[in-house]
Image (cartoon, rainbow, N blue to C red; front, side, top):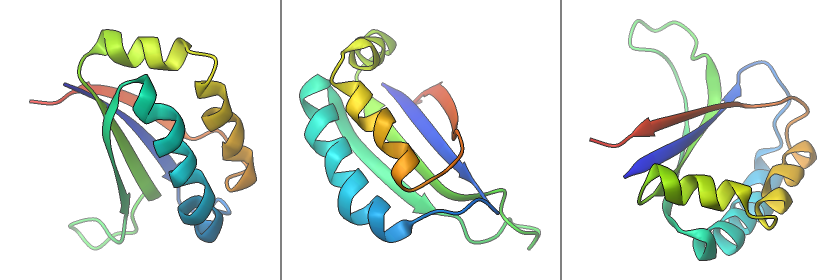
Length: 101
């Protein structure tokens, strides 16, 4: 299994209401048929040393394999999801891909 993690930095405007009411349902509607197994969203609070968290929101989308993730991202339907980011976050988020152990 692999996870595509999307990180939204602290200090950048983020419309949480839009994200939760519009973007997350869009992710589910578009990405599930493309092979997404599940998604998780975390709102970072603080680091273990009590310093400010680097990110305000971290989302992880899980796929069966790297090939399944690549196929989903290459599908034209995925552009609807990536194109929606500008509606709640004015910058480019960070993306990471990792194998789930």
